[in-house]
Length: 597
Image 1 (cartoon, rainbow, N blue to C red):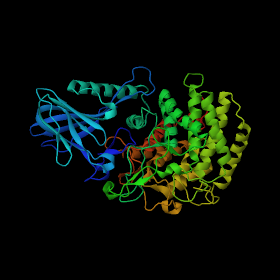
Image 2: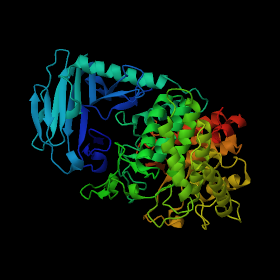
Image 3: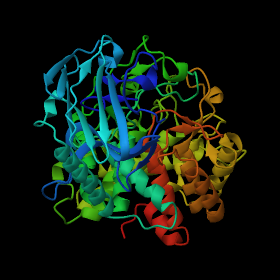
Image 4: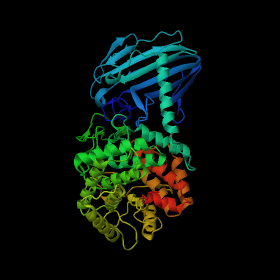
């Protein structure tokens, strides 16, 4: 189990995921039964579990309580600030036991529970509260504090009776819990998720259920308070078993957030797309265009990387890290990611109240000015390697995107930024630079960095961004080379060769799922539709039991890296939509070139 409270980037309260003995967990058991059979309740993030015992059966709903907005609020979901477990005996009788072994502050501090009411308790270290309630002639059980500091709630439920347990942070404590109130929370949460999912249901022909699930995952990774999209809700799940490639992903990366804006626009969630884009625009304004790669959930920095030596790591994979030093890197690709999303958003919303205003456009034009001055310089690249900066071809590609989208955004707005003439000249010079220095003469394929012979799966995005047509010989040669050198088993694609790349980090890693879905999209634009469809189906067939994907995977289907991963689900949705449009070449290339329809 893994739970941070009250925010994604807060210290953990339960961290058994990273230390089985010392991390702490909230265990729910029904006597005489093994682990429950679990599934999501339709198109929601409410988890439903069932137990069957010799004496009866029970069903439980686990959920982070939420409600629909009271007005046309772009947040779409309003969090209630509590985790609820609602368990009902459906047949016979069942003995239910909750054990909360809280280990606050990444298991660095002891829990201190005290009774707060007849059915409640308060934990002082992390500022938590617990409330319980029962019905059906069952007295509300009083939580018991054990000698080891854990908290236990136990009761025998007859048929039809329900036990509700709610855990939350002191900043969001409601009144006394009742079963009727907990059921109301469940109903409102289900309604909120269904309303969000039904607003613009995906009706494509490829992976429709998986696309809907991926969209829900992305919404679940968004902070309703600040508008930030985190890369994943976990830290230090290894990219290889026992390895050291273990990173903290509980923060906002500009490239993830920009991609989710594009996906939300394609799914029809324009109001929310605008809200998340404006998180990025505010950072553009605050930094005068000199973007950092990542932010905390408040839109600020200061997230130094620290190792937690007292935690054993997931299946012994050390170190466990909190914070991320990638914040200090120079990653020039983010400039293009942000401008790409901004152009698409403005094309769709121009003339409406949701369109970007003059000040917001000026902040974005500041980013273009910085890109104009910076494209001849090396950077740390999209993969955040911990080695000397290089002239990464993918960074040059996205800098070209920044200049191209900036020019077109200014034209769309009827604006004339002071540097606009320079932007056009520099865009053309950069394009020529990429086509001259970024291509291997012998194979005709794009290379990972200037002067290198190695390839890189990030180059598959060349046609997806309108830099070249999908059937350009250089694009086709790049697809072939990526598959030959980085492909595995006909469906999995590694992002690069760690040894040949000299990325400054020890050990291997799994296949990168975003790149595997990017291969699907690249094949669609190359006209190889059947091959793309086979790959897409092979990838979707390997989703986890709840339809979720991690960052990476091995050829035998083992998930690796932080989970669930926004990047992967973004790539899946993009690939599905490209497959849906496969027979409409004009529509495909119109989207890739971000040409307003």
